[in-house]
Length: 258
Length: 189
Image (cartoon, rainbow over all chains, first blue to last red; front, side, top):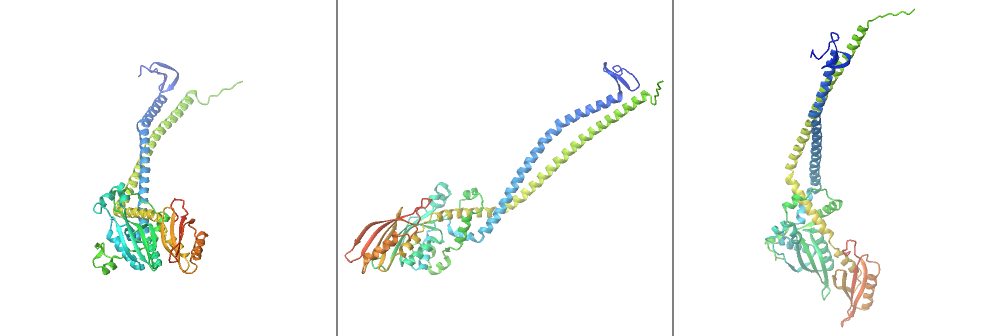
């Protein structure tokens, strides 16, 4: 280096590497300039090699945090929804399960109709139903395509009695569990006008618990209409098996026992 | 006469200026180093902070997951029950109020008149009502006029299909009652 630097004073140089700078510098200025330049180079290296990739990492971390926070929020919402639904359904749980039995329970349908007719003082004259495949109903209900078709059990029923009692019977059919839907009604008076016959075409519904469908059903809060329905369902009459068991020793398996 | 006094030699001033410049350069150099160290420290701290925050959120997620797995059976049960409620709501919404129609029709009957047959069709109600005793036809006519009036809100039209008299002096009228359709297309039964 000595060769390349022409000494001017003890600490001064006027050329670097044989190039004349035209001005005289203190050697220390040059070395500090070199140090600053080196620092700037190091800073640039740090920025490109360390800082920028780290910034990307920050962004990734921030995104991951946001994702996790959203996930946390949704999971918390789910926990809250479960507890809210629990509070809403609570005591109505049994009612709902009574509303739609899990299978084509012909015994339950007939026994409940018999109990309801006895309650309002009308007589069941005839009934006819075509349950279809009871043994494979569960498997069919698992298949969504057939679920709707298989979920109703149609029945034709003829009851007779006083018209007021028949109207009460219609009421009780509509406000009792399991849920039934009357599709058509025919009223015929007897010759002596003492009795009236009511021919009903109705459907009793059931719902098999299909685990796939249950799992894919997102939990949601009930609408006001559903809440009102739930409240009114709680007031519906349900088939009292205990009472029936005393009255009919054969129990519900006696499908044709009136 | 011009008097020139050099209080400080030029060389000394230059040295002082050089020293001042070096001092500033030192300051800049140290400041740069300090900035770099600070920047790296900030980077490390911020990243550490983010990682701590992420870990905390993940821990919370794990806690809630634990809660949810404990509630899994309950969740499935509630989901099943909400499916039942949806289906019940659908069934109930499709119900027709036959009872109301029957009650309304029977409320119009007077003494010695009765409904002989009543059935529901897609568009309305087909009814045969009868009367006997003195002034039978007038009694039937009275019921008919009440039917045609605006007493029954679901009634759209009344068409008389047949008026007949049997040998036992029992009069009967067969009417076809049109029912007002609701917006859903279902008859307002």
